[in-house]
Image (tube, rainbow, N blue to C red; front, top):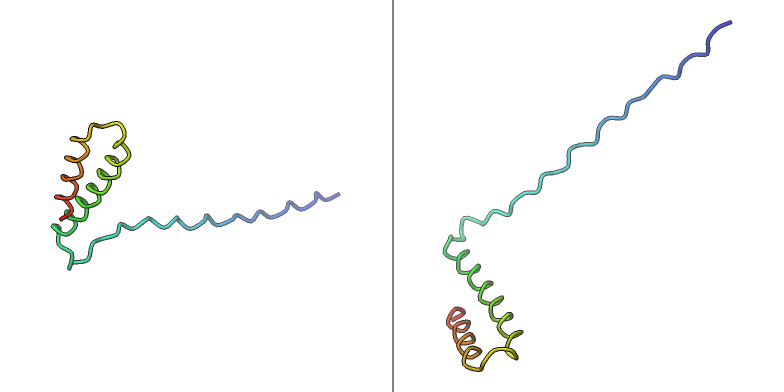
Length: 75
């Protein structure tokens, strides 16, 4: 009596490696000062939103000072 032939194994090839996320590089036309200005404007916007959310809990003098500071950063 002969033994039953063993089935041949097929090995799956490993999946290709996941693409690495690429950093968005600023174009050469953008200077670092433009990027810095953009970051500061975003920070000023966030500060203004935070201040407007707290207007009910702050004294009026602090509210107006914060609005003036945000306006000076934007302009």
